[in-house]
Amino acid sequence: QISTNVVKMTSSKQNNVTSLPILLTTCTLSILFTLAATHYHSKRQRSSSQSQNNACTTTTNNNQHDQTPPPSDTLKGYEAMIGNTPLVELSNLSKLLLNHPQKKIYVKMESLNPGGTGKDRAALNMLKEAEANGLLPPPLLLSSANDSKNFTTTDKNNHNNKSSSIFTKSINQALERTKTGGIVVEGTSGSTGISLASLCTSRGHAVIVVMPDDQAYEKRCMLRRLNVVLHVVKNCAISNPNHYVNVAKRIALEINDLKKECIQAFFVNQFENLANYKAHYTSTGPEILYQLRTIHHVSCCSAFVMSSGTGGTIAGVGQYLKENSSSSSSSGDDKKTTNIILVDPPGSSLYNKIKYGVAYTIQQSERSMKKHRYDTLAEGIGLDRITANFALGCGNDDDDDTEETTTTTTRVIDDAIQVSDQEAVNMAHLLLKHEGLFVGSSSAMNVVGAVKWANECEVVKGGGDEKEDIVVVTVICDGGYRHLTRFWNREFVEGWGLTWPCDDAEEEEEDGHDVK
View (cartoon, rainbow, N blue to C red):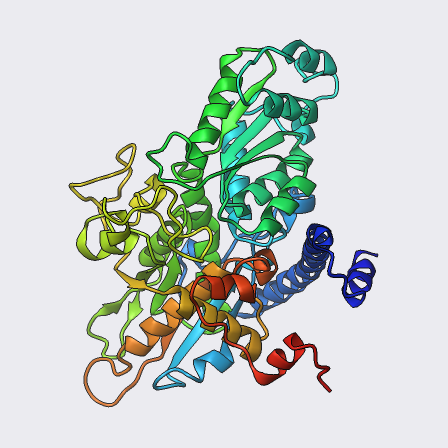
């Protein structure tokens, strides 16, 4: 029914601006439902196929991480669809690489998680740890209906008017929506908030999201449809008390300062919460290695290339691949390990941190820094600070910038590549035209980084003429349907001084001519 309504709304060619949020939200939900159903059935098929392969295949490497654990029978609904996303080769793009077919690019399709991103993994792990450690009440599925501590309407009414701050309305709205007394509060660019909201719907917790104003409008629409209490604030440096992460922290503290029985607010703090890193170390990394070996018959990848938002994915996956993917090189004299490469957008200081050990970029200078800096078209990636999760990929440095010492003794991230907004826009259009993949801004940047690294990498290994395949893995983080008003909006992109890549047919459509 939703798909039918989308078709009707699209075919009517309405130009009324007020219909845009409804159309975008309907399109988003339609796509998500389709992806969820497709993912569920394909996951069952993959599970069956893997079971058959395991029964007739003898594995020479007995490392316990070589096989991903089977899905737990206890997982239900949304949770059961998280993970086991496909790892696929971008065959058409790989053909454009220098020295193809010795070089190939694979993408981990995290956009096929039920929430549309890999944030589902981290969100679930952070919620479970909070519930296990008593930072949130037990979810509804574990609570007894007769438990005297269950959150009731009386508790909600008793809380009203207890707070007199600017957040009073939001806090009271969250209390009206929580079924457990738990309120999850997070500062996010959108994707983590969507994952948290989807998970909390079934677990019974309310969600308050604080979001910067430089994110696509579609994300706001979807968060509101998921019953989230939403705050949108000006984007600014983390040192500003009005930064979206700092505001989320204040809201959580205010709720807990009420000291009301049965009310618990949990500030997720995805940037510093190491349950984020653990989710990718224990699931995404093992899945990639397992799929490379059992499906694509590759012992390990030459490089894992991706951008960083919180740092949890690149540090977690990178650490796992470093520990488990070494193999003999073609010369047989040494071991080859996976290179972990950071992709960084304009305005982010992470590139300089990896290359030179200093978390600073020219956009942070006193002369050029804006009050509210918007340096890149990409959403959800690039930072002007080192988070606890990202620090786990940096190794031990003397100039540790994190809130606490969490760095590992061995450096995980080997090198960094800078990618411009124009390169990301060009790649997104190329992927749509030649691979049929409709991707978001961070995904496009990831693929640009993978192509750059692959083209710069030498194919011939050791002595002689023997050649060894170069296999580069990156991540498709989310779909383009979340970026229709920014990254996939021609007027918006050109307003940034960028060039919109389009073919003749697209230009004719925009001029009002029918394309036969």
